[in-house]
Length: 138
Image (cartoon, rainbow, N blue to C red; front, side, top):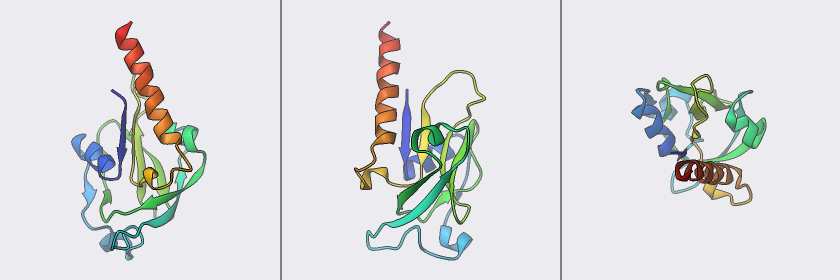
């Protein structure tokens, strides 16, 4: 089943596969830019890694609306990093493309729903779900 994990969803995906989290990101990077508080989102420029599904979907960089104080530390089994921010924080993970098959599994640490100007991630998961459903019916 295609999966798009958003913020905590990316963290749950990672920990479900045996990964770990930084419990309080400000203690690791020394600032609170990722979660300013009072429901104020921070904007971070994320850079995708080449040869990842995410890079194919959104290009080399994207502005991300962030509101998180935890972040992925050690990767879960079968995942690869697909984006980081300027602090080196893992901002996206996805299914390792070296694994057999082509399942759509992507987790982003940011909130793409905060900017409806860019629906590429949602379009991608809907298209993957359509393909999955069509293949199951056939």
